[in-house]
Image (tube, helix red, strand yellow):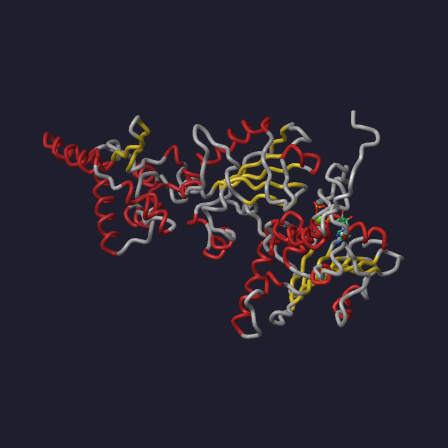
Length: 511
Ligand SMILES: Nc1ncnc2c1ncn2[C@@H]1O[C@H](COP(=O)(O)OP(=O)(O)OP(=O)(O)O)[C@@H](O)[C@H]1O
Ligand SMILES: [Mg+2]
């Protein structure tokens, strides 16, 4: 029981030092702007306009929304650092939690933050934090200014034609414009930053931006509405989703769904490049964690994995999973101030691990079979040229002795077949696994039999296929229909149906 009347002294944080510390929370421009967008969404905005004006070191940015706006008291509280407690219960659509975002995100990028806001059938209010003013030794207290900077009135004009809404103005963008002048290179650097912001928003808010009845439109620099970036290519016919699961969890049920994205062969170059995401296919594998449909974590394995913690690796790059919780799960998921960290509660980790494990397994098969999986012959029916086995000394690779070409060669060799066996053993014991692996990681993907072949290779394959067809029809006595089906499910012929068509046209299939 605390003492009823303890003795005390007041220890307010000095404004200047406190604000400078808050600037170091660790936002990037992208994550800072996303925090402003959170607030607009929480205020029921349907349209958000972002404008970045390049003017060298005097560049500035505005965000205008058509949300419900604020009255003067509300605005003062909104501008107060920690104006709302994280313990306060929020409405279900609220993307906020700490009462910090507007201030910390803005201070991380600019030294002058102005907010103008207009509630429906109310009056316009303007408040401003000016870090340089507060830093003056004669000030150094939390003085919230009650109007825009001199000469900046016109920058608030966007609100003039609104029924209701809020405008956030960032001036003196010291972090963004550090080192920039008015030259061409500076301008390019500035607009490259704008492009990164667009890409980030297209990802973080993709669930809000999707579909004809999208809940939200974002326009950057007067351009057409931002196109959402769907990490799962969920509309693509070759994407393999698992069923949506609802799992009871502390702080409310979570939703879980896995996706194996299509092999590169099944995507055009543009789709493949775009689906890679900002950080590329390998980095963007793993879990996508959503809070109220807003993306917090884009990829990674959340410290899960058995027997060892999974890391992001090339063979699993087609595996992506969506996990969603609502804002009632914040404490259980340990959401941080920047909304960029979330940790799954202990109770749901086993299920996340189990589902991720099976999604990873299929993703690796799709990756290794170069798109043959699901589209052409299903993996289980495919006769591979190589087999792999996991043993005590790791993974070993063997030439498939049951491959039809192998059977034929063995038969032809008769009692000499043992020398073939010797040769295969040497080949198998010297597979340059490490080298292939390194090449795969360095080049993104290794070439294999499914790449376009040069004419010599096609000739060689055609000769082999022809010999095999003769063998299977005349020596083994199979029907041409069956021979054709066999070849279409045998490596590497299944990747070159045109060769099979030439040798054994499909018409021979009809009785
Ligand atoms: N664009 C806006 N429209 C209407 N109200 C807003 C807007 N931006 C901020 N507010 C009000 O200001 C408050 C403080 O915003 P701030 O981003 O600092 O904290 P928060 O959103 O409550 O929590 P968090 O720190 O998690 O972002 C909000 O709770 C909201 O009431
Ligand atoms: Mg906020």
